[in-house]
Image (cartoon, rainbow, N blue to C red; front, side):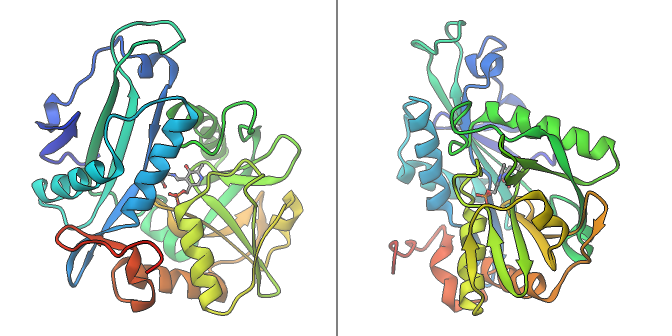
Length: 311
Ligand code: PPE
């Protein structure tokens, strides 16, 4: 991770090296936190944070699901995010807001522990490698099942959930693949360790629906809108493992992974990137860099008031 100058911690800008917490923090012991991953892109009009408000609203919803009260509003975090990016002099970066139960009492019940809120920013290149964006990755269906709605609520982007993803990606990479694909307990395709999944067959695009234990990805939503604008039909539906094997094209998406083609699953060659993936990927990169008017409402600039939702 490339260090930058400042980190925003509970309302203060602190030096990167000083942004520390106590080892007794509740969030460290029990994974009791919620977080976000957001990207800021360089555009002709300056750095633009992509769908910042949508991400911060999801952070608030994630906290709500965990009965966690965030001491900062979406508006306050939005301002702090822009200020931090400017303070660190970054034009393109990843932004990581995280909120967790802090230091006070141990014991599973979070009790009176404070909720600490932190924002970090640093330059983060292609998540699965530059090559991946161009040539695609090899994925493996994991033996680990994605957490279900009644184990840990997958709708919350909660820190503890990521043990599930961590086990899956370790398993996949140890076996020589680049990414894992997790299924639900009853065998439907869910998510990658940090991405949503799309399948293309006969020019129809399908992606697991929200009941398949997926994170309700903001990039997923972006991709659906782009695909529909390009004239493709997009179905949110249950997918089974073999849908992956017989796909014409397959890709994963997420804030970190952006739009990454998948070129094989469990050694079934799919070939990547196909024309549909490529078309969506091309528009995606134009959109995030502010070069596509149709989606300019998603770019949030520090100096400009972001467009009101639905405008
Ligand atoms: N599913 C999972 C399990 C997931 O972690 C992410 C984001 C997504 C789907 C896509 O969501 P969205 O970013 O809203 O489009 N994963 C974040 C964390 C990656 C990490 O390694 O940390 C991310 O992409 O920022």
